[in-house]
Length: 353
Image (tube, rainbow, N blue to C red; front, side, top):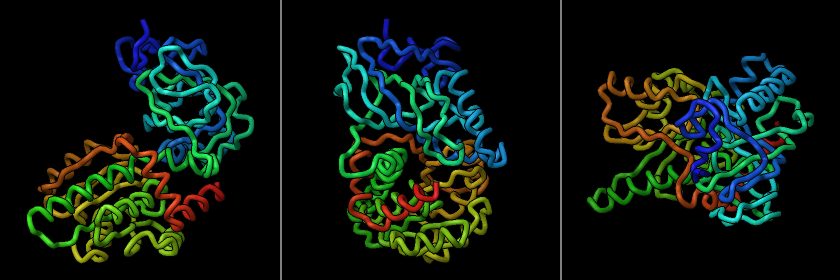
């Protein structure tokens, strides 16, 4: 019997969902409710790529070899240290007769579900990848389940750009929802005070999109926090934040001071988009009482976040960005189309890779 969530693809341990499994069956023969994708490019998530690059001292050949080992051993791309994976683009090769995804053979798509639960086989040894960028040219195949999500790639954007945007499209969508709810709540209460937003890692992919999403949702003032001067200059030039602040997000006092100085007080909403661990306490400290912290980074320790908030006696709501909000793909692509500053940041990042 084939499961809509892919239970029939779990090899070990039995009884868990594909994301939690150690190994999946990546057999190319599809069940009636599955879809097979011919893969052309992977996008490793930022936290996973950073961990691999640091582990191997920037040696691209060793990074490439480890990614190949992970995929061949596990039947999916799931970094055993960070637990994260990424996503992919490719062309629909076969559609099961009972697949509910609405895809057709020949559709060029991006998967909007993590590689950590996607059965994957690499056929070319990643021969075209130097191991030094998050985007990975690849020939292989992947399997989508009945409960998977995929988006047909837009014709008006380069595939590499669309992949980079769709990889983080959950972040701006949830940011917009949370900020919009705070604005609406204050309006109903007759409170005219401004809603302020801090985005930690504001020059990155998810960070820059979250900044413009917050502004469009009604945030009166936003601050993008970055760790180095080059990112500060790039984010300031993009014009997507009210103000740009320089701080190491791993230093709680420095981060809190940077945010409160820039905004004239702690942020009502703090969005954490950095790909390094140790930023939880600073994010809590930078957030106003009754405010909300959204964690999008896969480097986040949720135990550290919860215990840190308790230790600081901080009355904040903490949300885990799960990557899915209805309409998230369309929203993120629309922001890149309509916000030249955001598009410039994405294109600069892709050029550097």
